[in-house]
Image 1 (cartoon, helix red, strand yellow):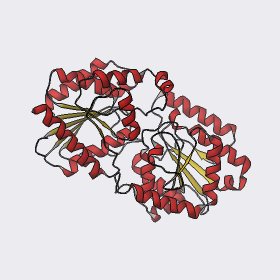
Image 2 (spheres, one colour; image 1 turned 45 degrees about the vertical axis):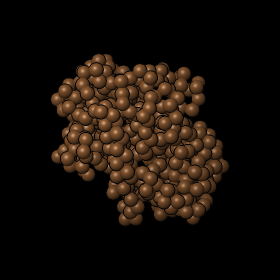
Image 3 (cartoon, one colour; image 1 turned 180 degrees about the vertical axis):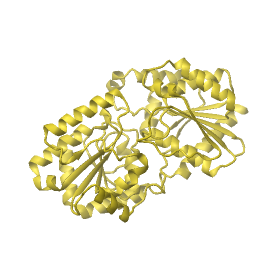
Image 4 (tube, rainbow, N blue to C red; image 1 turned 60 degrees about the vertical axis):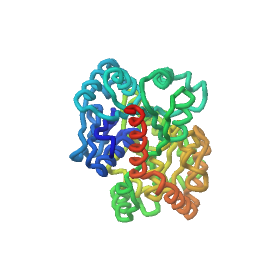
Length: 403
């Protein structure tokens, strides 16, 4: 690159424990792999994430720095001035041309450093968009995000979906705002019949068992309780489907509220006597094993109440798996019902049950939809495209700063 020499990426969730973490991971490795003349520094949180992270194995031009404060700030357990001091120290040591911060508090802390150093600051807010004014008023963090957008010292905003774009505009983000879709690692996610058979055997599935996979961390906004309620409905109205259906929820518990929600899900499963059918928080669901679980599944269900876009939907499409998702903002940006996937009304377990039964009874049509999903995403969500668009935006912004 002509103008860029060093890039600092900031994300407390690196390696990935969410869509935002995967985004940063793929961006960092995509840049470092293809541009050996660029130095990448990733400033990340530090905690026990061994069960859900990818192997780091950083490239020669990729350096990872870990500080527990970056994790703690997102949990409200440390002060923003501590995070700002850490970021200031890293900027002083590495002198990046561009800093790209991927979370609200880290972005604000980085913006404070603009008073002391000359660099281009890009911010990306990963908080899942909401759809109504009332929803914005329920969560005070939106006020802080709006303050960041209106008053923060930044040079550009990068968003990863139209839903994020509309939210940024609504909350007062200044131009330039660039929409750049996520890129997924195609080499890690691909159709593999042998792998499918191996994983299904490990899961003790019979040949005609219908495996429903819900790739979701344990979080109330992910709507996992809606899926359990839907399975309970199927047990009553379509016992022949219920007997052949298996459900695996893959996801980590990342906070105290996640633990509480997990307990409520366990209670729900026991209440409906679904323990034979539903596995919660599947222990072998590390991110680097998701390709096997996608392959083993017959349907991927994403019952979220809110999504920024839906990384797991794209991954499932890449493995040629049909996706059934709620029609919440974000997901409906990539899923067109009966075309490249299927949708149900957000928060509606009855309609979800009906759609699950339809999927079980229409496997041929389901496969056609899966192939349409694969065709839809294959050129749209690539790492190479994501990397090129980011670097182009980085360069355009620092050109203005330097001129």
